[in-house]
Image 1: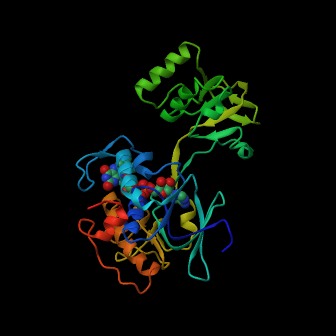
Image 2: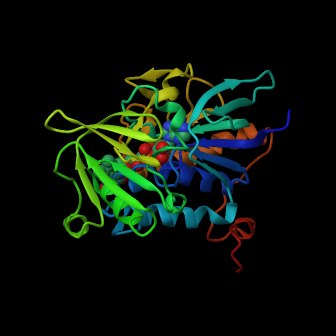
Image 3: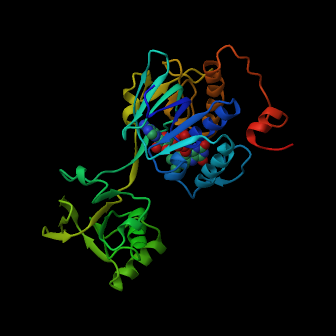
Length: 339
Ligand SMILES: Cc1cc2nc3c(=O)[nH]c(=O)nc-3n(C[C@H](O)[C@H](O)[C@H](O)COP(=O)(O)OP(=O)(O)OC[C@H]3O[C@@H](n4cnc5c(N)ncnc54)[C@H](O)[C@@H]3O)c2cc1C
């Protein structure tokens, strides 16, 4: 295979709770895997939608939170050292003549996998884009969506557009870094926690943070045009525009891979959780079968049986005995625990 293609036994699309547990179950069966997610971090809905909220129905954990569950799953899978590819949205998938699957991300990364596990939940979490014509080429140089690191805005004149927690927190976090920060929102109402709002109002009152109410309508990389509520237009000379308009799931490409769908879910059997394409499994919220419940515990069961089904493809003809993590010396070796 040409260089630049990552060869692997298994590729997991989605690092939500089910994708993470899928990697663990594959690890127990000695199947090495790569895990791809459009988000810059693991955890899927648990982290993105309810990170700090308590969950009470994870077996053996009377109470955890979305974020803590993701952290525990990452810790659990760590001995198997899966290769994570964050910030990459899988765009396409195609079976090759040798029965492996070529999978490619929008950014160009390509994998060649013997088995594929679609753990894509409710779709790829991607930032909502600004509806301003012709700004796409500025992305990454002058225009940024929900940036993870802010140091690169040092000394710059920055506008943060948005009205939720992420927007307000980003504007506040930039204060000691940027030369000047403007928080821009279409109305003077923000969806953020009280203490964050109080901090924002206090910074505005002490003239450290600018607050501008209006709608951005043109941006050429150096000048941002904002339409104000009175219909006026305010041009702002800036170095960078940061849009924090929310992150929402898009089913997107998964629906176009030629796999059988039922009401936008991937149809699977309940023995292997395999899709209509042998070798491609679907686990967690993305799949459907009679009696399906979109619960994490159901996804964990699906991932366990899908891993066993994949083992038969990765190690054809090899008898694979069921082993307990409690007693198996081999599993202890794999898990890196001494007994
Ligand atoms: C508010 C709320 C509370 C909930 N509370 C509970 C609860 O108490 N108990 C419970 O059991 N369940 C709960 N759920 C449901 C639970 O969160 C889901 O069942 C679970 O997250 C499904 O996990 P998953 O791994 O299948 O998918 P997700 O968590 O959706 O993760 C899928 C991941 O795949 C990525 N992805 C998708 N497409 C692509 C692509 N093309 N390329 C790259 N990456 C991609 C996404 O970015 C995402 O990170 C709750 C859900 C919500 C919204």
